[in-house]
Length: 280
Length: 280
Image (cartoon, rainbow over all chains, first blue to last red; front, side):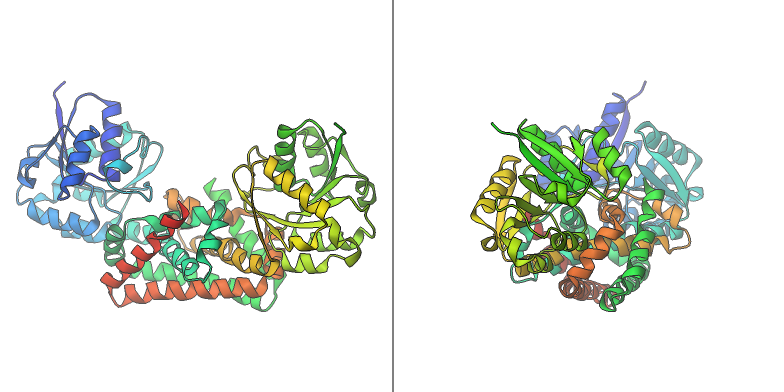
């Protein structure tokens, strides 16, 4: 079989872990990386995440598949910089927002693109954050797939299936609303939780007592501010709606505690328990 | 060595896991359980968490050590029911709130009691939730320890040390404030998050997309409503203060997104990142 050339724009957690997953699945891949962070480039080479570093975006155009594994504003910028692309080149962006990206891709190369959001990650970033099995048994959402070329759709679906992902298709607008509730708003909560605890006088002694609940709730407060600034910007209206919806639930809880409506509070917590009948 | 008789009032996650931990550490313990839930009694026997089931609280008074591993309102009720206790009997309550419990113990048996809060747990409950290593390398807070007898203090400290716990002492009032921030308020957030997502029209399809972040943030929304109703009641004022503090942080975030103050938002997230310099 011929070698398949795979390019990565962005050599962090998502790109690096994808390289590990693809390498495990087939020996036919050759990986070329591009990252404006030169330290990340040398680390990715050292870790064997890529076989070579490209000198420019232009060089990557010779790849069969190009992953855009960078913050979402960067994805929009790179999409503009491509100019033209060979007809069979498949560009897969891994951004956590999809509507603005999907709409911003120049018409002439829209069929080259597949807008994907793998619903996985950790709070860590950079090439050293890359891990085995980040994608295994996880969901990947493909958005506005009818705008991708038939070839590109086939390539992307096969690739994600081969690394053990479950494919869900939906339109980008719907995706962004769902992602706001399931991912973006919870990140805002985690950042707010971390800051509210650290504002306390005895924050160090409070944190010394942290059990599993607090550690879980505050884990994603360690996520990259640069990545999340872009996400909150691109998904502003949905994120605000999700925060509002959360706030009104928390206010309910606050009122019930204030007014000592213990029976109603118990029922409200029982309602929340039901999430896990769906999730587990 | 003589057999040490250990009683458990409450045969759920905390009591059951403690039995496992103690059994691992020494063969000199004999475990006697009491639970108003007869199913939990038979399950605890079957699982080998206890050697026998007591018929009444009175029977348990013959134990060297008695753990109260029940919801916090139950702890207060049981403390009233003891009447008298042998001078060397050690009663250790494992409640998540401490001030009301510490104050409610009848004077005559106050020296028998050690008010402890192990900063560990899972969202599961009942004897089948009991797990190995729940206590290993975790913090246990001992409150108002000067009110416990010298013998009782020694017994409790040795026991928690022997199962691998790190002991922190503080007064009950301080504990309750810290616990509100590090544990009780985060539980309120998790319940509110679960309910706000489930209120959405497409809740099932949203939840189908859940990644690790959402799963972590919503895990403790599965916790026992009966247990948490008691905690919110007993720690009402601190919990309300912690919720207020969280709400003002979340409002900051909301305003920054609304007003597109991206640079300030980025800085705010960087502030939150610092939590993990303290926590990790």
